[in-house]
Length: 55
Image (cartoon, rainbow, N blue to C red; front, side):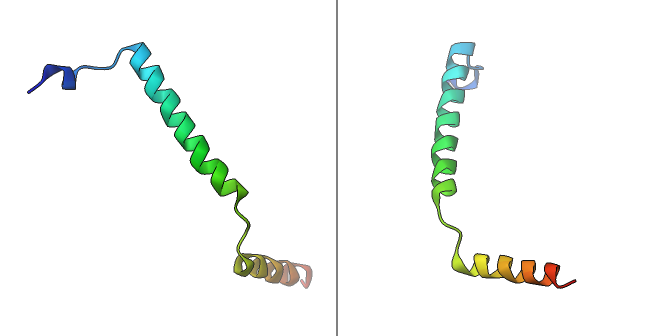
């Protein structure tokens, strides 16, 4: 077995990996934030608001 596979990354390698993970997470979540709320979900929220105000 290749011993380099088992070694722990040094700080430089770790920070590079961390930066790549951060960039990928930001890319995924920024896309989700920009998506519109589905009409069915909006309708459910409106229904809940009407029920809450009717109490």
